[in-house]
Length: 335
Image (tube, rainbow, N blue to C red; front, side, top):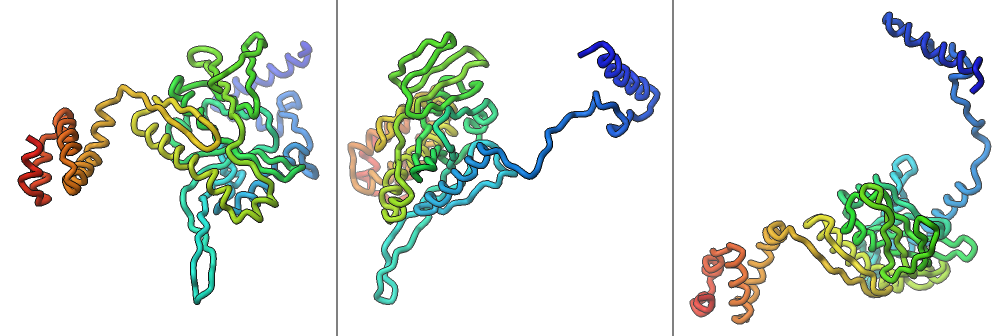
């Protein structure tokens, strides 16, 4: 900044400070010099081509998703960066009405979808990660739209739960599509066998996650002719698995290690030191299981479960069985 320009700028700042010290208002923006006005680029009459490309990708995704889901599009005014659509998976079932065959679509599980117009690295900042770790209640998937081939590719970012298990308050997560090579801070390639790599330390730690192949990929024309079976059969296991992971995450905190085995199977390994929290949450389930064992007269399982209940400090289960009118043979088998 030239000296005369700087003098003009700071003289106005100090003048406003002097006015405020005497209880006067500052000079309104319309009375300030051009040095303190924020220059704005002319707007209106045009849209960025890249922005328009993203909009068209959402149109295609909306059409494809509507074939096997009930879709609610998130308005841009309400978009906070993780979901473009809130979807409910639909199950196609046959029904007979007035002796004619019909097909009905039944709503099942709900999930979020983030749409991308390309396979560039998808980044989540610390604020989005905080929301995922603390508040998300439905699975979310990434849908990459190929506008030239009218093809939708769905990815399951389930490894983010493994990242949260390692660093619940990470500074960010970068998702890579169809890549197995990452680079460290020096630019050297790193080969990853577990599809996840942490870079940095402490509060600045971030994760690079390789998403692997899509869990489901099809063209719009195929979806239109498929009667939704393949889309449903591919997405349903992942939705169910993610719901279990989210529920467990809410119960015991960010202590879950999850590994995507292939496009058909998701296997989770859960680790925690919050035993009392889990034990308290499963007491009613264990008592219900005790009732089932007693009802089916599975005495070996009944006795083993009773020993575990005693170890948890639950000692009134015999009275529970008496209240349910079980005979003495069942009650005495627990001695």
